[in-house]
Structures are given as C-alpha cells and as structure tokens.
Image (tube, rainbow, N blue to C red; front, side):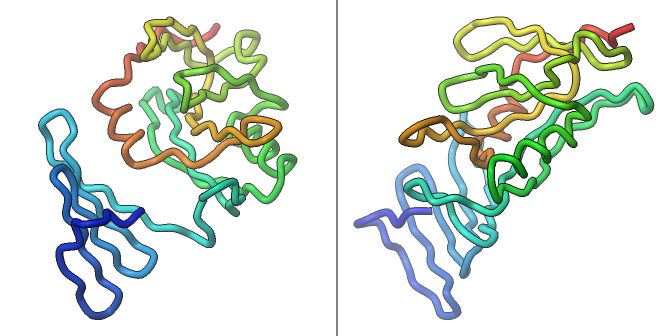
Length: 186
C-alpha cells in the first residue's frame, strides 16, 4: 500500500500509520493494511496481509491468491472463495492450478486486460462439471465449463505472469460479475 504524499493524518506508536485522502483511508500495522474506500456509493473495508514478499516491480512472490467459483455435483451448492497456491516456479504453479481444477492442463480466458479466468481445457468432454456463461466487462460472452479460477495478469519483459487477485477485485466480482450457471455436463 503506497503512502499518499501530503495527506499523512497521524502517526501512532507500534507501527500504526493512518493515511487520509479524499476518497480512502489506509491504516498500516506492520505488514497488515486496512483500507476503506468508496466504491459505487458504499464505504468498503479491505484487509490486506502480505505474506513473505510483496509484488512490486517484477519481484516474484512465494504464494498467490486466486478467486474461485464452482458448483460441485456432489453438493449441488455454489462454492465461492479464495485459495493460496505455491508460486515458487512455473512448474509448481502449473501443478497447483491443475490440482485445483482436477485437470491435466488448463486454458486461459481473458476476462479483462488485468484479469484472466483459468479453466480445465478438457472440461467440455467431462461429465458432472458446471456450465457457465460469463459476460466480460467488454461485453464478450464466454461459455466455460468446470471450476473457474480468477487471477491477475502482470506483464513482464517476455510474458504475462499470474499475480494475486486483490480484495477490490473480489468486491467487484461480488457486486458486478455477470455469471450464469447453465447446468451440469451430462
């Protein structure tokens, strides 16, 4: 969380810092940040805790957070949440994603310039998986099958890497994601 120059409001003992701006507040307690922001007329509290490293300027993090949406056949209920995966190298990352998707490999669907959706690349051929229709912010309709994993895209010198989904992304998904469960594959 960056400092907001010129808007420093107060500095407290024990590493607590409060930053004040017109639209948001930051409170920093060591590696935990509390942020409130006005989004679509709501005052929203974000709690961010950085793990071992932060992602700045191409630095690789040990774990990344993904947002997932699923509708398992066994429970017949929506399963929505976040999960941390190891991000030591691309092979470990690939294996973790495949484990979560219960797949051997995955496809990447562009949700926006900043966010991708990862899905089982053979999901259309498997039975019992949920069938989704997702409308992107650009108005494109995606028909996807299986568990959906949302990740951030980070452009590097030679490729696009995955990064953690943010609390703000999750909030925006929950209030604005246009998704419809069409049914389950037979």
